[in-house]
Image (cartoon, one colour):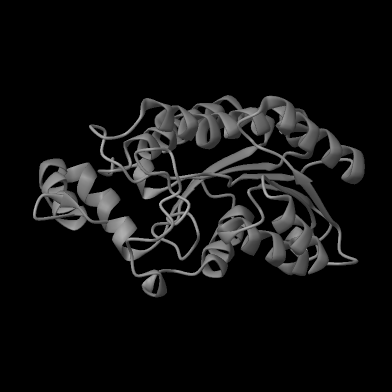
Amino acid sequence: MNDFFKGKTVVITGGSDGIGKALTELLLYYGANVATCARSQDKLNTLQQNNLNKPLLCISADVSIYEDCQNFIDKTILQFKKIDILINNAGISMRAELKDAEVTIIKKLMDVNFLGTVYCTKLALESLIKTKGTIVGVSSIAGYRGLPGRSGYSASKFAMNGWLEAVRTELLDDGVNVMWVAPGFTKSNIRKAALNEHAEAQGQSPLDEQSLMTPEEVAQHILTAIEKRKRTLVLTYTGKRTVLMNKFFASLTDRLTRNFFYKKGRLVK
């Protein structure tokens, strides 16, 4: 694997935290040129300081804004001359039932999770076709099975999966591989930053974070799948079981999912 990524230019959105940060640091270790973006300039500064004298480009950008994505991709090509791999990782989640949630929350999730993927992929596509590269979407089990309290998140990930499948089919003869990844529950900041019914970060995780797969483990699985040019990647036993059961036993999975997320009629996870 070390030789596969050496000298390649990899673009990662949302690289200042969680899976994105783990991917950034692992790829630098493997000798790749890495360009990453995030909204937090402070976190990007820390990432840059921790990787001095390495081929790392950090750009402040909000992927829901097309002009930010254009600036990010343009500066990447200016510095590294090409893009071999694009990993659409930036994303936000939510935790609120539809009856309580403001509609603006769902729009924000679609703007970041789905349109952010569309913008960066479209802008990087010409270079990716030239390199016969790889496009990755970091999706979720919520992109295969709608999850209560996360209707907007599920919608954005279903949209990502369907869109990437269409793009994959379009690019079959261009030599570009398109892959979407469902990591399952991963130890990260995404649940603490998840939006509540008032579009505010909930500030805490409803899950036992210590029992979840680490971002570093997820990153390693993703890179292995990229090297093998896989179509899809579903991680964790729970994730694989959920996808399989939802396909063949949908009604039963409705009830099991309800029981997992609710206690005495109240959303607790």
